[in-house]
Image 1 (spheres, rainbow, N blue to C red):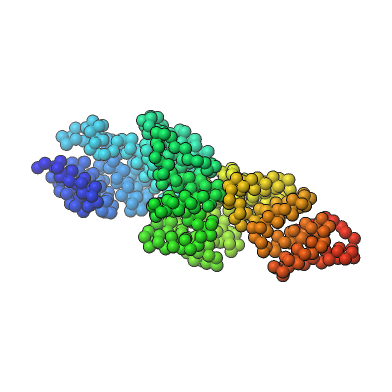
Image 2 (tube, helix red, strand yellow):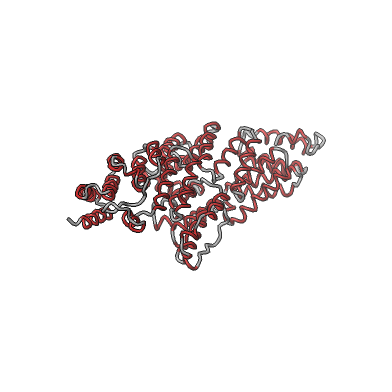
Length: 543
């Protein structure tokens, strides 16, 4: 009986995804070859592919193959990982190293490494890398993020082509930007790659790492020309625009990717985040429903639904329900934890919001957003010291983010450090202007008003008026902006203009206590009943 012909047929059925046929013949070959270790291995592979995880593990472990061969040890552990028996999988991986990671040939002699590699389809280095990768996934599932991180790093050092380990490190924000750079430099690319492939890997890895760098024109080395249109490369560029707050450019790039590949896995979270930032509720509604229909077991589907309900307002309970589903499907899904925190933050439920943000911070060590939102919550509970600490951490991760710089300025303003506040506010404004057309979005209106307030504190009244007027251009009917302009006019002694602005503010918000009080004072000053006292503490305390 020529078993090699049948073995080829098993591989052929596996390639054609006809796993039941492959399993049938693998079982018969194992009997005909009197349980040759290689044939038992392929039988276990077929059982694994048909989701018969415990049978696959038993086929290997009952014959002690997991103690003899690295590939069998890996497959047995993978079976228990797939069955969500994480501790058992870890126990198999932590057992003594297999006495022989090479394949026994059919006569019972140890094959050469070349032959073993051909037979098993895995080199010893790739088996070791796969074991480290699996160990990292198990630690991740057991919420042991530090050990997961070190396992992924080890997997990538053993096999620099192991993109899954690299992707898990970067997409889950396990490393800070500096740690990412140091790790990339430490990879043994030159030892494992040809010169051409080294340049290719370096370009691909570096492109994915530089998310906090300023977006620039994509420079593709001549040797790997053609990758500029690769969707993964475009998504990395879009992500860089997203983290630099250029949401319109990010949306343009992600939309282009979504046209070519409507369910591109790494593009979806960035695209959903951009839709939220740009307020495109209808588009998000359509996308989220499509995702839930097609991928109900993917956390990004429920994340999209949760984000939609957060966007439309007054649906926070609904949002929480769907975001909880996303975190149940994947506990380590950081974006869902951040959105979950938002659902509490908009209701001023600071404790629950911070609990969600802290979970996100533990999961996303290299992302500044959880730190930013924790700082915001501390600021809202009047704990400016802790707020400043978290904003500083966020700034160390994302030094170019205008939102973080703005919040640092707010803390300085609250501490009465007007000069520092002005410096931070102007720095944030410079960052926004560098982005270009994004400066017109209404979310920057508070920055302009805050610049007006700090200029008023520094007695730069003309500049203060200019900033408040720019804020009015962004949001024309805002009572507090009119009140702020009126207040500056009153400090300049221009009571007639001040009265006009306070009247306008009260027309927009009738119960504005500050405008009512100041209007009374300004009318008294205007008709000359009281001596003018400019910038006295009694006046300043109202702001």
